[in-house]
Length: 339
Image (cartoon, rainbow, N blue to C red):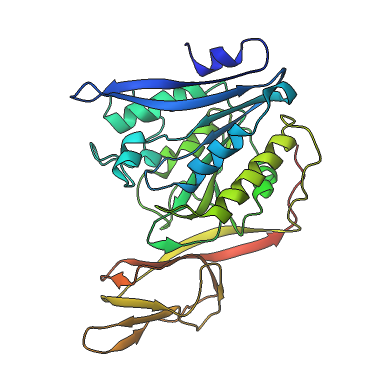
């Protein structure tokens, strides 16, 4: 079989699956990215669901596979592509990064055809996405040590021609608790090459793309899977790929413009006083650290109001480790209409 784009250019409603070759292991076992395609009976736009960049992000894989299984290509005007695992060796190892080079795949796009294996995986995917996908959802979860309600993350690429309003209209299909605009320069949110994220490189290629964060890693959360499936349906209807009455979107969206981490000043057992998603007011503490000497030291109170994007649920904490991911600046607005 040729490229995904070549298959989509064929005639008639169809369903198929295949593998994008990347390389091989010393044993001869292939390294490849599996994909599934549903080609509609009529032409239209292409929705691409990318199920997993990090190997511990499970909910998006299940949601994308369940959604594509229920599609009837004879009723579709457009196409759906699913790449359920973008980092198969990390998935097999049940860890975030590929164990053979320890690179963060979501900071490695657009990759390289002659680089390390993670860079080659990135290149194999983005080479297929360019010129094919109209919309791509980069499916993630938070770290397995954290609890988090579903939310979205988006970036702005100055040369993409894709507006913030278009991104928000697509994200509204998922009723996110927060829609976080991430500064590609970082500004203390995350270390590393944020411009190497899949969704940012898709924007550079003219594909509308964003991240959908579906709860916690390394576990199956049925409610988050169901939310994603409903969102895929609504977005496919918004794009005209599927027909029917699109479910009503949220009455408002809370857009976040600044985020940051709260870290432990000392080791101990973290006992939170709140839950992920909560608004924590200025002067309040999110919990305390129990020491092995019987002490209980409160986490320093917030200097500003904050919303808990994610909250640590693994109590074992060393100095400098993360306790909470917090939205520090946000605004409420009506979601824009789809263009």
